[in-house]
Length: 347
Image (tube, rainbow, N blue to C red; front, side, top):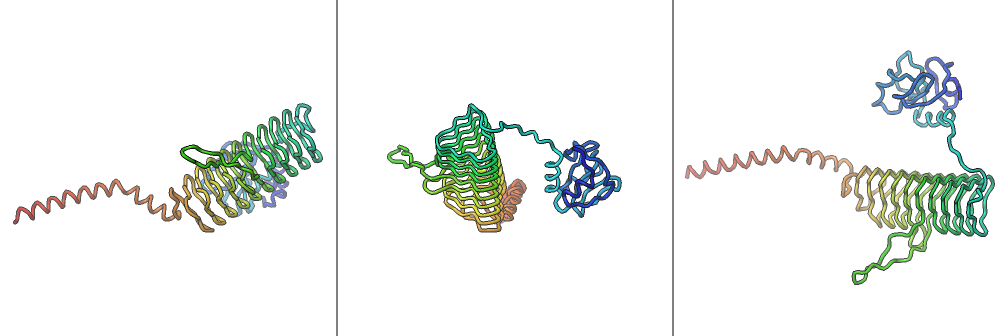
């Protein structure tokens, strides 16, 4: 696709500084970009690349200083603006079967909406509902009485167990399992007896679930993933967990059973949250943090066990000084022993 810089600026509600007639034919990262490409600069630490990039134009924030020779589009949010440009210029490489493939196994009383795509070897058990314009890629299993909303995209080899509710405009990546049994056992005389898990999972609208994510069904009632929440690859959500709207969970993080996560919470990579606690709204849990107690809203926590972030930073700073402190204590010990010896000699 060919667009002038002026046309792109109008799309993203930005302001051109430089030659607005430049023809843009591609998109790329700021390091890899070539003539004809448009790129973006959102992180100030890469500002030095602005004068080095071969891109024909760069999307920048309104307060970014750019070389006079470089044409730019100034906008409020360069990352979001570049996302819009990608949708305009980048080719749509997704390919999926249109309609219902003849190898799909469709149970009794299945309701399919308009323009639904069901790929090869998909299994839809009895009483499944799939909303308008939803796409289900090959090899996916959807258990009986489950409901899929409108415009939802389910990639290959996803397993959605029985009675699960998936909202509209949800994206679920390959290998994910939603609705497997929660990890519940009663130990009697050294033997582990399984506790039936009879609840469901509800994934609300506009959620994205990464590859190889596991979201367990509730023991009773439901495990909930709130509207607009985005989950990275390799994340574990245990039974009866409630995750609020617009949260971000990074790769290899996990939330144990019956914990309630508020709205707009960020759980960074490899962080873990213990079960049966509450994490308030707007909390940031930094990478590799172990949360073992409730966290109040608008907090940043880090470390294992988790402490307020600034307190953890102080502890880490002290830890880094331990070798010097050890040397100092050793020196003081020698000096004290020497003083004691001198005092003893005087007696």
